[in-house]
Amino acid sequence: MPKPEGFGKLVYAQPLSLIDYPGKLAAILFFAGCNLRCPFCYNAELVLPELMAAFSPLPLPLLLEELRDRRDFLDGVVVTGGEPTLSSELPEILRALKNMDFLVKLDTNGTQPQALRELFEGGLVDYVALDIKAPFPRYSQFTGFPSPQVVAAVQESIELVRRLASDYEFRTTVAPGLRPEDLLAIARELGEARRYVVQPFLAPKGKQLVDERVRERPALSVEELRSLLPELSRFVPTELRA
Image (cartoon, rainbow, N blue to C red; front, side, top):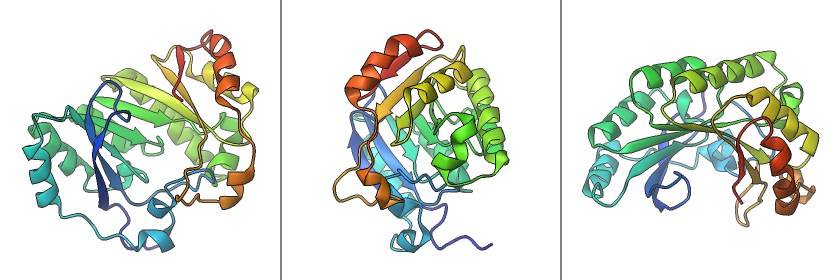
């Protein structure tokens, strides 16, 4: 099946974030295209082909020049999406960022373990945030794909991150429908991981969800998530990012 126009392209940049790279000042680069259809995703314009077509790829030389001019101000760059590991351009872009001495954080859904391995072995990533969408028996419900290959790929990526990543977090956006027992199941799966982050579901105004019906469904509150931290932390060091 041909990929939609714009798939895998760098299409948007945010010049500064204080929260997306823990403890760092960072720019954010957004890649279009994703192989999942998580109904609660609020970056629908980077996921759904009919919305993705509205973007034009950013001129990479100009973008890199702008980042080079800001090296004394920024600590790093976050690459996100969509799913950036689907982009054939990603290694080249990360190599250029590392050559400018930027720290690089990668946000990923973990479905491309071979791409992750190559980035780690190339020394192109300093921090990884791997999204765990749901406990594995419920993965299809929260990703839009029933394929068992998705779960197998994410499990392989989890092990790669544990072994090869310089620094990392596993994280779960607690979407409507996820229950306390689901988070506990994820924490047990992660076992001796370095860090697990739970964050409440938010449906930003003005942003389209992949499935707008999710917007009206109840989700666990910040208070409910905070009360779960001691139990989750029995299995893996857990923090709430609200």
